[in-house]
Image 1 (tube, rainbow, N blue to C red):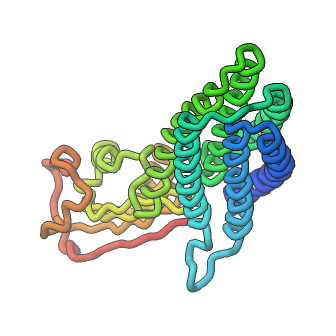
Image 2: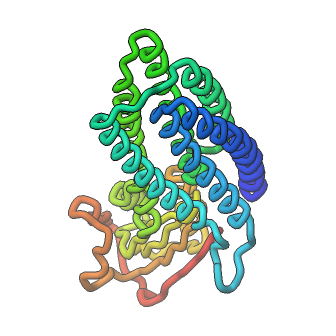
Length: 327
């Protein structure tokens, strides 16, 4: 069931990415020509955003395609991490193009250029419609779960804001002839995009550095396991990270020797699936307390607390261990 859903989501993302890529390329060319002919920095800035949009969408398409490859002995998770890498590259590109636009806007203040407001307005309206269509295509995909598709949607959102700025600038120039509004609005739009790009950079870098997903609280997970599963005394050696859209977890659990080892293991995995949506976990059960500083890895003082079972008794098979792995 989950496998089929994943491929269905990927197919939907790929179709929407391809459609958005086609729309973006067509209107990018139109804005380059229009910006050159009208002398508008706002249009050229928007075309620059569209150029990075096209590159972002192309990389996203490639990442989705490569991520469909099956795991093998060398890449045991497949190539899912390519989607995160593409999002990281997209964020870097967006930061770079924003810096260039800011530099050009500052230069325009010192040396104002004539702008043809009518041509600028027509091209800007066409670009706005194209961006709305592209953003709609991406927004109705799986962007909330897929960091790579969300990266492409962020590019298009920045471009959409750029088109709005270009329209406002064109109207003001046509009504007043005040050309400095062109670089001013380009600068404001670039600063808005900069904030979102920085957030995307941090999120993708967090995943590339094997950080725990921000949506999951490791200490809370540890505390919940010890409080809600009576046999679990202590949880340690916890490692939580993410590959593509999948959260992955490994942990050691000190437990009261169970009458049914497999049943307890199933309850732990079932709890992780239901309450934390972690379907891929490796759990090692132990009957003796863990000794050593490494046993507190990932724990805070509050989370390190364990059950104090007054009726617990150590069995003679205290050195026995159980391991299990689920996909």
